Image (cartoon, rainbow, N blue to C red; front, side):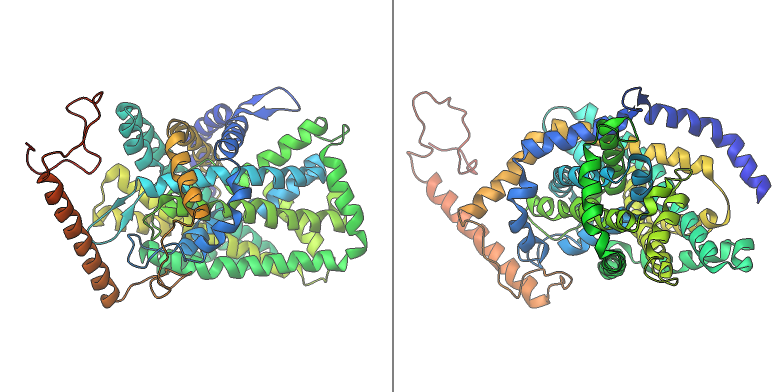
Length: 550
């Protein structure tokens, strides 16, 4: 294995170093600010203002959408809004919420936690835009399966506004970056970290010498889910994600309760440290950069994954998924990250510093905070890390599959081939050290944000129209009421034959009504009515008649 590691390092090492240097290039101010972070920050601030602060004003409306009251079981799509939300959360809630927060606090002090939460709120608008466009430009096949995501809204959306060639180039680049990026960030890295945590927690020499065993177990479990496609992934992530969230949040709250006498001091340290001129990482602005960077790297707002997850949702209104997806950074960066920060701060373990700044050091810091409850309590953290890692492997499998099918075709062979390779990659990631490969794919992962956000800027008017139109219809009471029996709900989204037949009958009746109306208008010699200043070729608002008039 060591020789293989060395060979891989020799090949990928120089490439990974060069690519990482470009993608994560730092402007030498405030201790170093990565350009990619500024790129993500700019989009988050712009979209929050552009969409009129929907993460705040539209929060209550979004609850009904997530509960499945805004969509019908007969709508196109494969999963419920809640299952799409769970799939995306399964990919973003992970080591970034445990190790990343700890490292941020170790480097920038407790104040970094406030910036993580604050920028998590701004990131909600980015996810909203991605999910809305993902549904609007998705492709629905005759068998009901869906294909969507940034590849499609970059290609088709930009073509719609007259930028066809640019859209094709950006879509291709995005698919390449995504295919490589999710393999590293969503598979190899996750399998490697889960294995490392289990080996460290158990102290097993057997696992230490045979790490492939953990990888094989992950591969078998993941394969059982992934081979069933997005419906299977959505079904399982909608179960695993709430369970792991409850476990981790409950554990973090236990740490806070045990150290409750230090809560006022911890809150004071977080609030004061966020704006302290004597912050560790270059003053108050440096602390902010550390927190913002960790928030963006944790919730992945801007890389486009939300557009892929929500493109499979059952809905006829793209905006419903925007209001669903905006919860992801709220849960990820505001709720989970804040609880981690409080646990680390209130227990005082952050005073140890960030160690070597690695994820392993971050996990160790969080484990030390958990140990203040009981000696055995870090076991719960180990279970949480394993669940986080496994769920990420499930969620990112769908993103990789969509990218592969966009690049190589939507055949059954491409689909099955990708799933097999994805499952086997978990064994490879667990068994060997692939530092160079992971560094390379990590850079590719964040490169996804370049074409994705460019496309969102071009399509900003489209996003704004979809989102604000739904909000206006909601305020005016114009949204259609859906029969409770037809509502998608949070998991039960398959319609009965009778429901499908009833909807088809309604659609046929509506089509006949429209045809009859057109025939009546065509028979009217004064239709279409035009103002004197209108051109003769002005299209009728009722649609073009089937035969010439007059």
